[in-house]
Length: 333
Length: 268
Image (tube, rainbow over all chains, first blue to last red; front, side, top):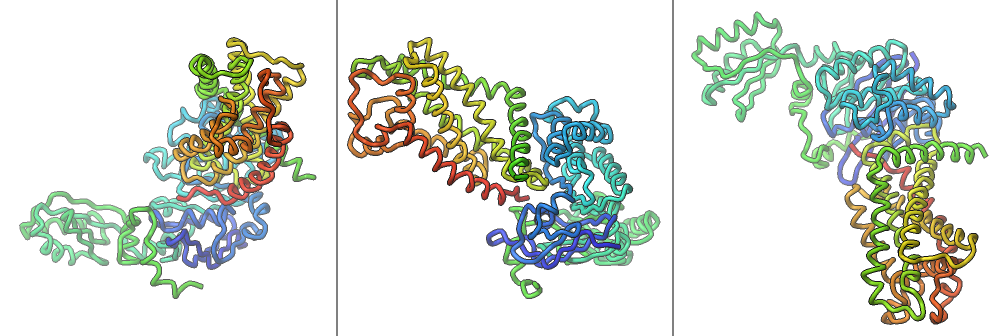
């Protein structure tokens, strides 16, 4: 397999803030690579560097055989980018937006128009194609933005949080579209905050935090690392919290987490509903009053808790404060 | 050579986008047109009575000044548009395309000329209503409009630079106002400069807006009879002085704005 995207030791600082702290990345041809991490982990920065929008402070990268720093024009011919915010002109219609991009890719007048019509059809936007984008719903905008990245059928696609902010239905629709794209052989680098999304779409996932790799592997590898489902229990009284932990410890297959503030205990288990039932019986026998209980699949937070010991919560400004990353500088290449 | 062809072709695509916006958001156009009409009427009737121009009509004197001021205000819309594109991530999209990267701002500044042509057109009509006339030939009159548009185009490049540099759209209106007001008021736009205090007078004499206004007045034949002969070179040669500014501004700010554009990225 050929490597379509290769990045080595990418470093990027925004003033005091470390966005990337020596990131290496390899995406093979025809595969879907998921970059998974919370807000401020450096995902967008990494994509921006690979898409030639941003120069790294250190490190190098090649995309489709061209050097991102030395030959940005060549890279731009090979990529399609759909950013975190739908980069569309509100006042143009869907058709005009796509046609404009086609003209800027120099497809020529008739090819550009034909391609715009074709993409509107594929993305189920034909009817809305002659309406200004400002009348579009969030899901329609994302689809159109994605269509914009595909105008020139580029061999490499970068999708930066394609479904963030979408309602569940639009998200699932968009996943379907992305899967179809990939089936046609595009190489895709995708960033997301959702474990579920990375799991569903990616062949390979890298979990990043504070601009550094935390873990990497197939979705299955990752699931093995973080375990399966979680039982989440909210007790009626904080006083019951220690006893609840004791009881649930007996069912845990990994580290148990408890939040005093929410009176909540989360514990990874294996065995699903059967184990949940037994756990509930035991809690009941111990006379613990429950406020809420549930069985759920692991989230990004659980991944982080398991891999780093802290949850995936970014600092207030959306990025990790420099103090936390500064201590890790020794690892930087 | 291919670079230039691409630049032109891509600029046309970008300019077309901006022109479509004029059609789709007529409110902007209304504002662009109403504000200068209001200015013309207000100055004509509010100040017109109190400002005495030796042997001439204040309204004839005034119109070129208001034209000049409107050209500057018109150019501030360039920075708003550029900053909006940056904020919405549209510039990120353009920057990821294999297009001529200079075309985005070139197309933007070019299409902003259209706004200014419309502004001049409506203001001229208002001017005619309040008694302003072009007292020279058609060609000199057109040259007067050309001079105003040339300066406005150059000023758009300054505003494009501001647009790529500012962190948010909101900053621009205030900043634009703070720059445009003194530039257009400490000048011969609304009052003769002979009576200004020395410091202001010297500033006004060398202010390119004064030369622009003076040049337009000359080309329209609006210099009041018996007005004192200018004593400084810029006002003696207003057209040449204005054109020098136009070239210098473009030579400095077009590259600066494009440099800023290449680094502009929505941080998320």
